[in-house]
Image 1 (spheres, rainbow, N blue to C red):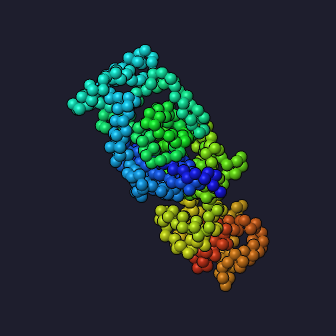
Image 2: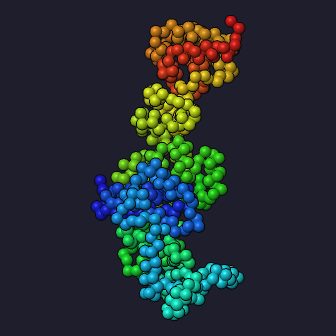
Image 3: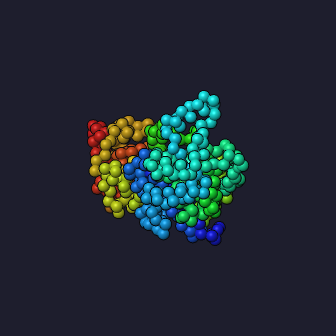
Length: 497
């Protein structure tokens, strides 16, 4: 059921300056949910005006990560759309037009100050313990002189001409009205000396021209939010609904994630980067579920959501502006839930690449039989080869000490294994129904607990103390291979007859 009948146009507008992390994934997810819920459009726009920080390959990784999460966009650089181009580096002429309009109408001005002069001004302000800001030297240059200097090729930027009196009030959906005194705001640069617009101008122009109805972005943009409201109003445009999302804190809950924190996380087998999470065996369904709840809740008890559930139930009104700590235990929890929710054949398809990466070449029909046996036992996809790799190995690496049953000698263990071999050899077919009862009877005759005998058999047949159910596993391995492995185990025990 749609909560809002007005189609929303939302944009996810990242900068390709690094790897795609959880914060970006969550913003894109919320954008996607609003668009799908209202029958609107989800737009991908690449904000690549900061060419110095541009990272080759970052844009492709971003697209791959979003598609892995299932967040397909309706308009974007690769799929086109009615407001192309969707890369800001290709829209320079558009921003220059609006920058010129702001200058002509007295809302912006040319600044010719050199980097050296600006550095000196900052130093003097620091000495006086004043907040660093532009001192306004070029605000009062006459328009004719400024135009002449620009035409003469003098290096310059364009700054927004912030009013020195009054205040500005912007409304954030989560925080309500935010009012700031104009005298506390800087004359921000909106166009750099190379002619490329900064985010402050470019994003506002694009959001207006692309008819964006909701702007979802991180709360790190709150300090410059008043500037963005000023630009909208100077150009006479209707503002979108502004939503500044909560920040993510490191798992300890103390402070934002840093580069050092991400390295430490990786050592522990975790990552905040979406492409890493895929490689670590997490499901996109689980990641979506996890990040959706870092800043939003449906009620005080529902926690399992598919993407379809989220489209139906998500609402901006239930977003929480409080910072959210990244909890990887929760991710493991959700991943387990979503693994159990998959049809077994679908799960088999998803674990197949992890077997291949482990150097195994599973027969897919056999893998489909194995999957239901491990579906309740794995938390991440990469655990599948660890728990079920023995099905596809010709030889097992056996430790003779492991083959000795609990409270048993090597000789007693070999005797029990030999007796089990004879029973299994005599069976017309090897199945849980045919094998379990006679082996339980054997344990009783040998004065063993079933667990002692089955433990020896488990090591012999799988090479592992922990495995999927023993008798179902033996049936899938097949009688010939089971008998071969028991013989190898008896050889490994090396007990004189």
